[in-house]
Length: 118
Image (tube, rainbow, N blue to C red; front, side, top):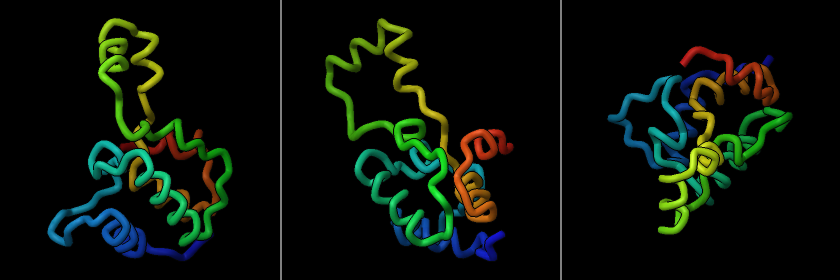
């Protein structure tokens, strides 16, 4: 079990994502949905997370949690008319609570982390 504190994760998130000290961060905040970290920025954020904290990558899959950089107009139109297309872009929200639990566990386990209360 790792001895990192919530404050250390919070400080990391603030530095890496440019989050103001005035904004209150909770375990329920989603990296993509609430903090607007997407695409290449999300790749870099997660690489730094795994470098900074002693967390084994385990079964972490980037595309499970994050969308790409953006959508073309054609993709937006296709999503509007195709449920299958929309499902392709539905992502599991990756929360700060999931990051913190992964730190405590020392590894990324999709099933465990995605079952945490939000």
